[in-house]
Length: 48
Length: 454
Image 1: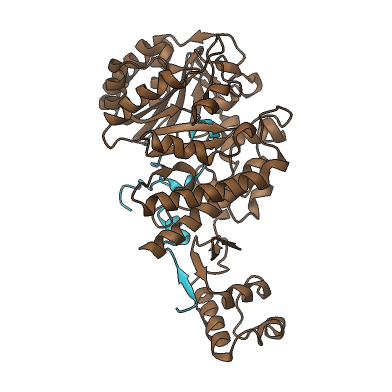
Image 2: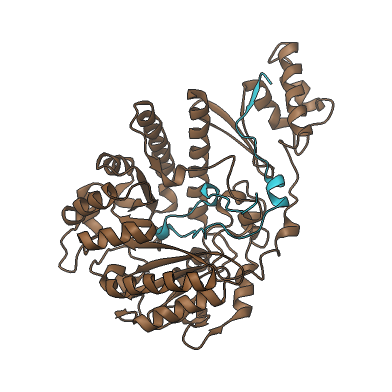
């Protein structure tokens, strides 16, 4: 494409297929724990 | 749903439901104003009438074809198909615990959410036996979940250091017996750090949060000891020592900005200049009536400051002096799955807090508010209907979130702040939402700028 550049290859829809194992870190949303953004977390699915 | 915005000369388009992020030229960007939730085969009449003369035919046709291609690939106006997963983690095990080992503190920070250390419940330290029961409770309720988290918190957890050490050793024994992997973190104000404690923290704690508000005059205005004196001079050398010896383990030098330092970029850069390459400085969340609180009328100023900060970070990276600012970190490719993103922290469901008395609360922010007490690690009681209530708090049950472009990045925000300031865990705290959205815009812009640099 010439007029549009896509920054990322990931697709959330694909992540839902194998998702929900829950092994990733809890991501407290309160400011005092420094974790307000879920999107900076790593996926820790064992066989992703 | 899409979100389009311009920042630093970039025309950025986020497709909410696929997570795709695009940088647009002017023609396709303007065309989006005439498209609602799809890209039809032929440009809508209104689009043609408004824009056909803006560019030559080839540019117009090319732009529209590219929009159609994104739409065909499911990367523009993609559908929200995740609500069917929203009950998926309702029966989740408990995997994380905030252990309030000290309801006491040697600082009296003006803005402390924990009523200056005691959560309004009197100054107490957690006995070792209560801590062990909390670890047993976590293991018992974690079912098949292997990775368990425990955050030593307070008040100031170093005020109960011997118990912290004993509990780590106890958990290390228990994890072998139960095939678990404990990850410890500690959040400290630094005053009581010693060489021995630094060694232990660096060996055992997978993350470490070091409280510091930035410049000396900023830090010492609100982070004061009982006698009113500031703590900057005492804590900074200790933090520097801890970080120098920490290797590649995670840590954050973490501060709070208030209405008193809306020029907080200077505080972030000051912390980076002190040698901390992992920095987090966050807005105070407090009653709007308080003098230091961030008020709605401050938002334009704070937004401007976040842009200043984003540009400063990019500049430092160009100069080879880069550092991480926690709230601008975003992984557009390998982040958590969509299901995780439906409910964020998991407080009251996957994550609980335990007080020195052994009482269980949905998280540390609810501690002290009796109506939210969920049970006790001493007698094993655990309010499962309340757990389910929190499990069902997700971006679809929160009406403000359902139609928000940022919902898969904040995942519904902080339930405790929602309760404290909006009166309902399902009603989003407005100012926090606005700040989060601005941070996301900046974080994505940084990704765009970095892609260009590469």
